[in-house]
Image (tube, rainbow, N blue to C red):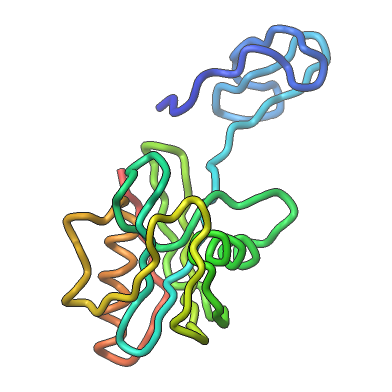
Length: 182
């Protein structure tokens, strides 16, 4: 399954690459530079975020960017180089919601196979009901489970994470959840 535009040129020397199985025992086609022998691996992108909660409510952000402009989501985005998943999730929560919170444990890990992404969400206990959303967010708002605009949720990973959160909250036991979305 090819998820992205194929690599055409070596990032090290600029020569045109060829796709073949490397001679090192690998079993997958890779972009290989015939000039400098660099093997270019294509790996999933990490999306990191939080499930910020205040009592029985969770914080959702209404998207001010594509994809899914105007839809609701948990604060999340692409992890940056040089940060841990938890650091990235915290950064995204500040950038998108302007929330004050205390990070808690990893809550969901979801492989989104058709786009080559892995989504990681952490629980985050809000320290205030005051939010200062950044430019990527139209509105940041707290919702009870009954108030969640389920038909307006931007991504399946967000819907599934919210479903797990409310189910676990009802039992009083939070577990780590794993899923693959095709």
